Length: 149
Image (cartoon, rainbow, N blue to C red; front, top):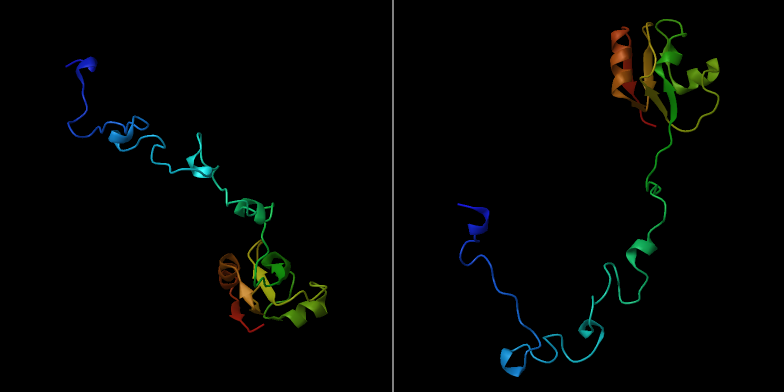
């Protein structure tokens, strides 16, 4: 078998519709596009995304990719590396950190992140913890507790 002998399977190729070849052909004169109007004209009917003159979706949406979150929650964040200088067995809360000067402003509930090293056992109470922060607090011999905001 040679490449010029290859043929598609019988029935897999359908002949194209011959339009504009008279009334008897079934698609004569207007070729099945009706009498008049935008969709009957030659060439492409409308471009993709065209909404009939209405402001299209791609122009109604904001230009930049950063949409504001609907129920965005602001946290006061701190890394476990900053807690390493505290004395052992301390009760770490938002008020305690403000008192020690580690956190200067209360920007919302306290969230502990896992950047840095911790070697002191602490009792940490915060609104949220990252997975890394939880493991580092536990490995140092401390405990963590999620408290309501």
